[in-house]
Image (tube, rainbow, N blue to C red; front, side):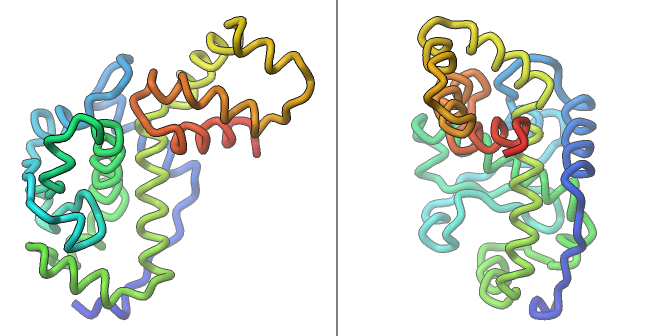
Length: 205
């Protein structure tokens, strides 16, 4: 595979969101946080395999092989509860490749870590950026369903400590969302950064 010649097709945000919603509706229920590890391992049958030094070797904490049979995850992070939310997003990201880039990723023929290292070294940075951005968006939509987010956000806004900030009139929407992201990230089991992205999107920021 000539990684230098790869071209990643454009996918609309609305299409990525629909794909994430379809996946969640097929494999999960209304419970949050979404147990993406269980979906991958039990419902889809993809093995999650801890690998020592993956982060150091590839500058990623997870990757999926082109045969769709295995997701490799950094050994240290896998066994450290502090990275639970980070890995939840990483797993959802790899499933983004599984759903959005099935044929492209299959053609990459990545079957081990050396193949992946060669891939990230040779693929044009712009094309790699498209690939990763689409998978990140899929993960965000999958783990933070927008309708559910709107509901949970309203619950938080009604709480006194948040409501006083909002009604002060001194904060813009983006700043308010940075405050809301703290409790809501815990509700959905994601990072505050991922939650801010979702909140800003529903506000059109």
